[in-house]
Image (cartoon, rainbow, N blue to C red):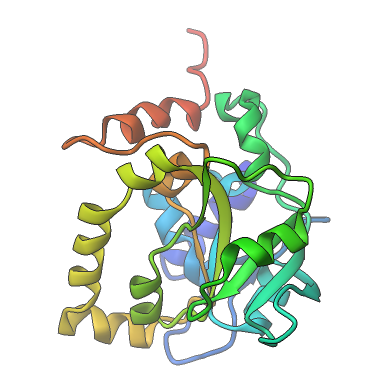
Length: 238
């Protein structure tokens, strides 16, 4: 796993990237799904290893099939390609030194079957219940991890949705999402997003904290800072 991480970092520093090309730049670890190397800056800024590269948004259906998984079925029969059940490609093997993999909530991160919806689709609950009829949704909301307005500004048509508690959902909302919309609405970011070659967006640490049903509020994002302990390997003795 470490060697994959090193190769990704090398390519981002000028190895294989070609800003003039719209061809996908990928890394395909043995027996694992392909990694969109144009999209790894976000998780790398959070210090996340490849086993925590979790797709939360996709440019289009082809991006889902390439970097997320196989589309198994339609979940909104009257709205084709608006809600999809996806069988995820095998992720990178987990680094079991990380405390995050000891949490029961971490099973949601790389769930083998996932629900993806179009950015303009709203009927999340019926679609999710069609995919997972045995999952109790009482007191839970179905959340698109990436804000829909931000997704549109960045050119992503599809978002992954997951069930989370109302408290964590609210604590990650309003203020930070409004800031993100304002930031990506600026002329500079519109130009950068328009030129981006990334076909998916991977979760950052704040996104993962949200998926784990942990609050992210507070002026210093205390819960997110605390979550850093979950994704750092223990210090080597000596």
